[in-house]
Length: 444
Image (cartoon, rainbow, N blue to C red):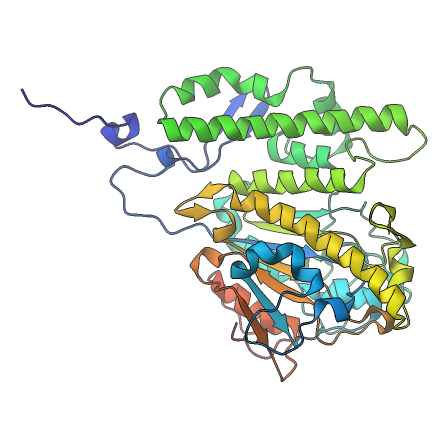
């Protein structure tokens, strides 16, 4: 008798699930994480999916606590980088890069991803150019349900004047679809959740109201199909699906709890439902939603503003009751700079938590973090003078193989952020001659 080797169902049939498999039911849809069953049987190892993210920090940096003592090439862990020590091997510290449009907070945010050398000249003139994340979205979006996500920890404001009589659009978003088309950010976890998993694919108020009126959870609506799918999966895929669906349930529960807390405890605050009153709780929800969006390949491009430029948020929980923006104009007072450094360190601590989540998610032969290029930084260095020279900029992740960490790369010729973007775009196969005020790609 000839004994056949034991094989999983998808290996026997040679079939595979689509990478964009959606389970639908009762008006809800659930995207799945990357499973072994999505790889065709006997197929060669596929190239890893490369994802891009920007994490933006506002109001400049306490440069004395950010900058290393030398210009490299060895990576030095400074006080602000200390929370990221575990990821030193996946981190490249870039120094000597300057802003393209150095006009206070408007230029910081307005040129960070666009590389423009000037924007609007008054409150009503809204002008920039296509941002590099949207150039990536144009290429990578054909493979995903959402071309990109634009997220923030602050409510968007695309009207009015916010800095030097220029439009608030420059301080509240990084992403531009065109010269006069800024993309608003979303700060409400409920709206983000529904955009990823809801039935309408819309963040309109009416659509959100409809979703909130539903009594059953999204997962309950597709549970029967999910159980049927699990019966055909291998053990590793079953474990991944179970872990993933519980993560979705957990986020849904936390959003609902946040809504209840806001409604019961803070009825006088005019905050959209779904936004937790505690900054760290809000941050954790937003980070978890980003992980799910990347894990399910719903998008490969995310911009996330830890806060808007000119943010006045205080941080009494870390011993800094001062409003962030006024504190950033420290007039080089060592005591105030030290206090500001605590905010910068708090931000990298929260960012490290996000990296932990990405590193824990299997993806191909590595993790989500291995297959990401993350740009962390801001458009101002010494905030007391709105300096656009020697910006605080990091690259993190594995870059799907291209990004080699543990290094400090210093540039003596003061290239601009637009030059860096040419380089990053090339790593994703997007080749353009010019972006904003760029002159040539950088060697990273």
